[in-house]
Amino acid sequence: MIPHSPILAIVLPLLGGFLSPVIGILERKHGWRRATGIFALIVMGVVCVVVGSMVTDVWAGQFIIYELGGWSPPWGINLAVDALGAQMALMIAGLGILVVLYSLSYMRDETGLGQFYALLLIVIAGMMGTVLTGDMFNFYVFLEIMSVGSYALVAFRRTPEGIEGGIKYLFIGSIGTTSILISIAMLYGLVGSLNIADIGAKLTLYSGNVPPALTLAFALFVTGVMVKVAMVPFHTWLPDALTGAPTVVSALLAGPAAVVGIYWVARLPYLPFGMPVGVILVSLGLLSMVVGVLMALVQRDFKRMLAYHVISQKGYMVLGIGLGTFGSVLGAQGGLFHLLNHSTYKCLLFMCAGAVLLQANSQKFDELGGLGKKMPVTAAMFLVGSLAISGIPPMNGFVSKYCIYLSGLELGQGWITAIAVVVSALTLASFLKAFSSVFLGQLPGRLEGVREAPRPMLISMAIMAAVCVAIGLLPAIGFNIVGPAQAAAENSVGYITHVFGENYLAAGGMMP
Amino acid sequence: MELNYAVAMMLVALGLYCVIAKRNLIKMIMGLSVLTDGIHLFLISLGYRAGGTAPIVAGEMISDLQGFASRAVDPIPQALVLTSIVINVCILALALSLAVHIYRNYGTLKPSEIRRLRE
Image (cartoon, rainbow over all chains, first blue to last red; front, side):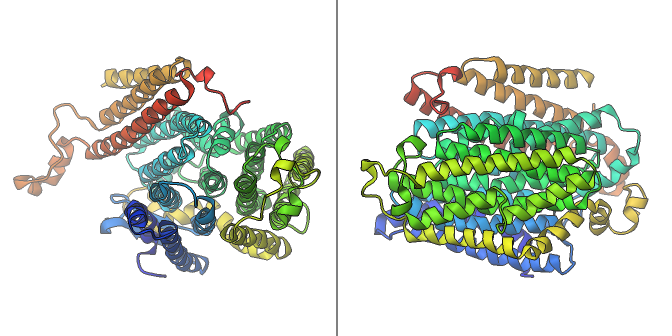
């Protein structure tokens, strides 16, 4: 491991974010083309190396604890990286670098690139922090860094649609983070600690006799996380924000930002609360799957349709993790695996939509058509992504969905499997409709001069598509990542022991 | 002490009501501000101790840390509230600037009339 790598993974994009506007000014003064974008790409490259070195150590069985400023927990803030956090950090770094690569061409004609990359890197720093930290309040701060950055990014181009999406996202997202803050305040009042492992250890004392205030804190926390994940009663911000935002930002919110939410969905049945939440997760997951896909079927806007599919697919993940809390290991693995797959193919699909929007200047199905001849590579990539999201073998979506189907049967709940299969079929129908109305059929005369997307966009799309096919053909790659992650999420005793040593839990959260 | 918690929760409820029920973006933003201020009051009250001393160790207190700990107020909520206030200022500034842009583009601040995305 590179020394200090947990904190470097957070601080590097943060510093890079604050340097980007300076480089943006230099870019304008000296006429260096794409200097800011290339700078952001280099920063993300270094972050990838740092995270990679950290993740290999975690997979080798290490549990990394980094004490900020040398203050030992529970007094100081610590970063704690187990296999679950490692999976998430790896995905954020990998998807982040591809999003930056894609925006090199997508944002080429925009002004204010310095500010754009500054926000992008700060959002990535916030995401990294939320999945690596071992402290509740620190988690809240990083969550807000990520959220405020993404509100601004959604409204970045100051189009009416972008601002509308941005302010909706701001209001609903703020209610969500506020309820997380109340929950943390109540936890601090009850337990007197902010360290996740410490809270987990001290809450075991309440076993069987939970005070009502703790239940309220838990409910508020779940609500906040569900707003961030955009499960169905709290989902309304997501389609608006993703439709109005620049497509790069839509890809960022659909891919890496989903990681943060699902990380907490996977964590919260075990730490810091350790209260049963399976029924809520399963029912919200099922509801989101069905409502998301039904809403997607009637959309006539390319990006809005993809946004509703984000809700539907996140439903699968939450369902899988919910089934996992009833003892189905396959379900929890399937949920985390689906997160891995969804982030790749949904980023890919948004990137295809962005390529079409950039070249044909429209995202309405009614105005598009016949682009398959003009943009063959984009069409092929979109086909790969569509098959993956619909769960058609040999794409990666099939493997993770199959795990969730099996998990439903394993628990003797065949109806859950049936719903999941039907939603998959509806997803396929929706994507066939999208594919035929964008890439097949009559080419409108207006689109005669359309050309293929520029190369950096195609490269990042090709990498995503390659990952989709590779994981589909060799699912062992994915299981090697999500297997340890699932085991680490469930192992709350191990987490506490790693942070505080053997005797801490037995002593009921008192220093021996 | 109970009064503090009651007022804090009342502020939270009022703020939430403003955000949900008011039909003007500026009023909704004010509601958001009241909501977070309620939480700040709640947090500060958690660490308060009537007649306590400031949590700064100096001079002869070092010899009597146990007694110091039983007299001092809890410093952590104060640090949390400072952080949270800064975050809240960011959100308010962003929300207000977005509201300015909404007014320029749509000519209204009514959320029900800002619905270009729904069409």
